[in-house]
Image (cartoon, rainbow, N blue to C red; front, top):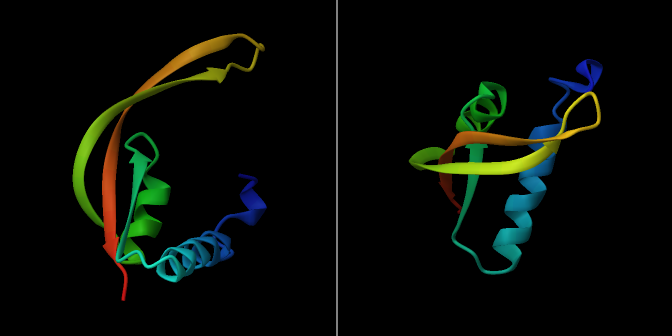
Length: 84
């Protein structure tokens, strides 16, 4: 994300919309995973009421700056929130 768009509330609005759509579909909780190598989103999710429920390994292909494809491997923290 571009630096000038950080801390403007965009993530909070998007998560709120996601939670409302989940409620509209009758769901009682939502769960997401956050890359342990990127703490900024996790801070937002915790502020919005998400709690850690576990961990899992994850990997995916991503494009390197030189255009090549590399395999990214990380640990994901699972977080859950009960919807009201």
